[in-house]
Amino acid sequence: MLQTRHLTMPAIGLGTWPMKGGECEAAIGTALEIGYRHFDTAEMYGNEVEVGRALAGTPRDQYFLTSKAWWDKQDGAAIRAACQASLDRLGTGYLDLYLIHWPSPQLDLPDALEGLARIQADGLARAVGVANFPSALLRQALALNIAPLACDQVEHHALLPQAPLLAVTGPADMVLTSYTPLGKGEVPAHPVFGPIAAKHGATRAQVALAWAMAQGRVAVIPKAASAARQLENFGASRVALDAADIAAISAIQTRKRFVDPAFAPEWDV
Ligand SMILES: NC(=O)c1ccc[n+]([C@@H]2O[C@H](COP(=O)([O-])OP(=O)(O)OC[C@H]3O[C@@H](n4cnc5c(N)ncnc54)[C@H](OP(=O)(O)O)[C@@H]3O)[C@@H](O)[C@H]2O)c1
Image (cartoon, rainbow, N blue to C red; front, top):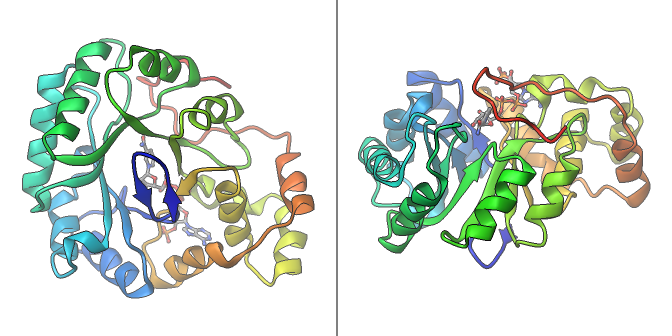
């Protein structure tokens, strides 16, 4: 469990993109049985109705739910309307965390942050934050001191360690939520993971996720459709990497970004 002054969040969540319809609903059902209590969705994923349906039988205070405003919402009013629409589709009264999904170049940052602050103050979301904000933009948003930013959700794994961003989120007591933490399944294939996994009686994917979570206030949201992979990923919390393991993985020099749409901001690395 991750705890900051803004939120308490299970360190492993289930990513739901690009699952839709019955596949998404079934995946959340098996994840709940395994013990997942943290789910990540967004208006853009087109699966909020199914996410809400799958969670309907679980008491609301028993799980942590994140959603996000798509990047065409460029001011506070649009972001608030998107949040309310997400709540309606999800069939819940509040989100645990509500994020701006991507920083559009047209984003009116102060007004958007005012919108997030009001969303939090009015109880639509327990905590608010951003996604895909590189370190300079996050610094700028924090310096405005308008919204209590709890999280920056970004791509993060051993091939994209996000050191400049962690240098901002850490001192700000923010969570970095690690999306695409398995690099779509490609990261655990790096040769460094094999011997470390063998040493711990763990899988390569578990070691990759454990490394991410060892970076300090980092949550991971791997997507897995099958119960078998969900169970495997959930078991990452039991893998206790030692300093030598972490140093060996952190020494990887290869850099690769898997999510880089045309509208992405200028990245740190
Ligand atoms: N904020 C953003 O802009 C943003 C962007 C991208 C993603 N996200 C969030 O992050 C979540 C995860 O990211 P992602 O889906 O891009 O990438 P990911 O979680 O790194 O990789 C998912 C892929 O890895 C496979 N996989 C899962 N567990 C595995 C295991 N133990 N061993 C080997 N392969 C495994 C999955 O297989 P199956 O096909 O069998 O499930 C799927 O093909 C998304 O679902 C979404 O919620 C957010």
